[in-house]
Each structure stands twice: as structure tokens, then as C-alpha cells.
Image 1 (cartoon, rainbow, N blue to C red):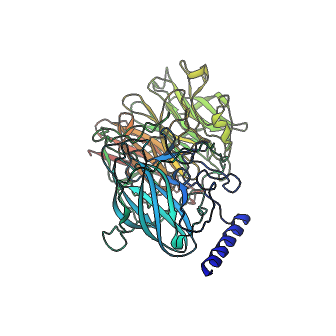
Image 2 (tube, helix red, strand yellow; image 1 turned 90 degrees about the vertical axis):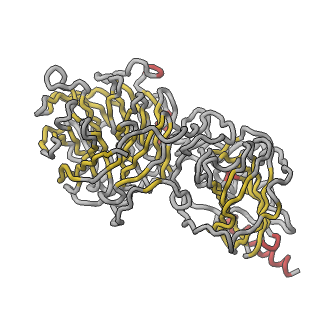
Image 3 (cartoon, helix red, strand yellow; image 1 turned 135 degrees about the vertical axis):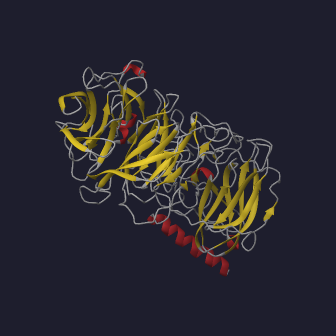
Length: 635
């Protein structure tokens, strides 16, 4: 009787919270896709398959089910290409170390609980994972044994200790083979009661990683994982979509934290960085198109050097946005975003103003103004004097051409207009490709649907001639080369002529993409990895706190990527169409970094990197920025 009264009180309390919106049945934090099965919208009005279709509180020992595709997912994708799953799908761990699924569960009381993790492992070897409860590792190495096929499911059953209130249960792979396919979590709470998933924030909260122990909190499984499969027929429930939130990213000013260099982007329980595996491993399942690319074999082939001791080439700058070198490397042009001025800078740091881009405008505290600069690849100062800029004008963003004789800018001509502008999300990087055409990165101008509109020039990478016309061979015969971009920032080509692009995400994931003609890179449907057919996944993602990327340069098949909010320089080796492990340099030592340009000196390879501490997010006074010289030594 007392127990029944207690249960009735719990039911009444949770029902009241549901009615007021204080808690929800389930909320997805790291959604694989805005339109995939893993992205769930208002769970109160649209029940989550496998959760809301069961009573939210029951008596006895019945378990409540929490679907994996509705949980927090890192380095994984939601899929439905194998039979026998529950709910709308399952989570494929993508063969990546640190891949995890985390469920959030409310418990009315503390005590011992039972959990069951339903999985499929069609490979021939066990998938090793650690199981954590509330940030504490309770099973250091759990072996998810082979199940005999990707459509054959087993339930791994364990006993754990839960606290009263919010609990998190996480399964994290410790192997480059990744997690098995995870279907759902069943929970029987202390005293045999059940509850609902608690609401979670709209962006991930890092969880401190405790030191794993083989004693103390380790709880043996209730039953061995080799139990006979428990089959559940799939539930054909269509996904519910949440429209994207169109909020510009918020960047933090430079910190005074001592540098830590180099650092490898790995620990997923401390930072939500995403890194595909470096070694070939057995794929847990065949993914629908587009599928995450397989990991490269062996060590990355990129041979670019390791960043060395930093020196200052030139100081007294205010947001030096881009750098373009003369073909012979004797000087470079540097743009200042807010002043609309262009400077000629020699390797010894001599700085000369050569002109101002006409018809340019910039806003107070925004990202618009004078952005990219690109000298003609055949510039010689006489028969070829062309230099190109991307800048903001009264009616929108433009690509313009001017003449530069080595001393003075002249003969302004707008060659491409019709690009919408905004205070934020203007893109702005322009680069000549190895094919001799000009590539232009444009932002969505704060209007996310433009990125998917083929008739719009926004949210795209454009490919044009020196006259501003669509380059021959473009898909559809327009200037659009690829679409689905939020705010492209860096463009560069590897030794095989492949185009790589860095991109600012919204609140969760920043991206490094391999760009191919006619491909769709997902925004605003996808931020980071997603499972939407016809949309390309990034090759690398970072938490926005680690990156907020800007320019990139590629030297000997290594990408060097500047990070603004992350205040570091990422070194990312390439292996064909895949990437090796990113390593961070200069962390916190020079503040926010903006442009990266390879110094054209084959005997002493180096980078020029500009800071952007005098912008609004940096908060430093005008004249605070620098151009840095970073030598590259043999790795």
C-alpha cells in the first residue's frame, strides 16, 4: 500500500511536469540529420517510437525502452538498412574510436537498477566498449560478442547503481572497430519503477572523464552477452523533423589559458570532437548513400611539416582577413576587412598600402566587409595585372576584379553580383584552382534555406571565369559548383587536385569537407554527420569550441586550418580522400587565428597566419592583430 501511494505520487508529479513542458519524453542533442530518423521534434505532441508508445510509468518489473536513434550520438549515424530493429532505426558507430550513444533517464529513487542494451554485431570479432553511468566508468571493457549477422540482435544485461533524479548511461567504444549497431536501452529502475527520458540541452555539455577502475564500481553482467537474440519487429513510424534554428555562432574572446601543444583531438567524453578511425576496420553495416567514408589504411600519407617556433612578420593590423602571394613569392597582398584597405607586404614585414576597394561597405561588429583576395595565377604586372576580391557592397556581396601593377590598385569592375549579404554568414574566401578558374565560398546570409536553393548563389561554392561567368563543366551550367553550405571559410587543393573546404557550423559541429562537383553538403538539414540520402558527410568535424574554423592551406598533403574560437592551428594529414588524426598547435598562444597561407619558398617551407583578435568576438582594440610566420619542420 505504501509503495502504491509512493508510485502514485511519482506518476502525478511527472504527469504535471509533462503538462507544463518542464520535461519531455525525449530530446535529441547530437542529431545525425534534421530529416533523418534520429532527429526528433516535439516529443510531447509527437511520441518517440519505442518510448512514448509504452506507458511512461508502470508497476512491477517491466522495463522502459529508450531508442538509440533518439539518444545523444557521437561519431555515429542512424540507419535502418537491417531487419529486426525497434523504433525507427538503430545507431551505427561508424568504426571510430570514441563513438558513443548516451541515454538520459530520470529515476525517482536511488538504488540498483537493471539495464539491457540491445545490439547486433555481424563481424567476426567482439566490439569492445566501456559503459559509464553518470560519468563514472562501471564496466571498463565490455565485449559485445558477434551475433551472427547484422539483422540478428542480442541483449546485453547488466546491473547498475542509479541516483535519484537525472542519470546518464553511455556506451563508448574503446576500439577503432567502433561500437556494434545499438538498437535500444531497456531500464528497470530501482524498486521496479520506470520513468521517461529527461530533457537535454540543445548543445552538448562536456562530461569529465573519470579514471577507469577495475574495482569498486564495476558491476558484472546479469547474464552473459551470448544469450539468444531477442527479436523485436520494426516499427514503421515516420520521423518528425525540427526546423533549424538560425542563430549566428557566438564566439568567445581570447583566453589567458597557458598553451598546450600539440594536442590530439580525441577524448569524446570531454569534448564532442569527431574523428574517423585511422586504420582499416570491418564496417559494422552497409550504410545507405551517402555513407561515412572508410578509414584509410596505415599511416596518413600527408608529409607536410610540423609547425615550429612562431615569429611576428608584421603587427599593427585590424582584422587582416586574407593573404594572396605573388607567383614569385616576393610579396603578398593582405586585405583588412573593416577598413577595406589592401596592403603589399614583403617577407621581411615591410607593409605598404596600395589602395582601397571601391564601393565596399562594412558593418559595425559584423563579419562583412573586404574579405577574400586572389591574384591571377599568371600575374606578372604587365600583360596580366588581375587581382580579385570578394567584398560587401550596398546591395549585397560581390566578386570584383581590379588591376595591380605592383604598386597601385586601379580599374575596379564588379564581375559577379546577386549574392545576398548579412551581418553574419558571408563566406568570403576566393581561390584559383589548379584548373585556372576562380572558386568562391558564399555563406547563407543568415537565411538557411538559400543553401538548398539551386537558383541562389548563397550557401554555395561557386566556380567562375575571370570574367565572372559560369566556368565550363559546372553542373547545370550555372556558377554553382556545390551547395548546402552554411558559411564556407577555407578553400585548398591537395596534390591530386581535390578541393577541401572548412566550414563554420551553427551550435554543434564545424566541418572539413571534400568538395565534389554537384554534391550537396547538407545545410540546413544536416550539421555534421547525418544519414540523409543525397547529402555528403564531412570528413572531419569539431566541436565549435575547438574550431570555429577560418582559412586553410595545404602543404605536401597536410591541411593547416586556423581556428578562431578554438584559438589554435590544426594540422590534419591527408591520405587520399580521407584524413588522419588532427593535432592542434599554438593553442591559446596567439588568440584567434584567421587566414592561413603557404609561403611560396620550396627550400624553407612555412606559413603566414593572421590573427583576428581585433574583431568583435576578439574584443581587442584596433591595431592588435599580427601576421605570424610559422616554419614547417620535417615530421
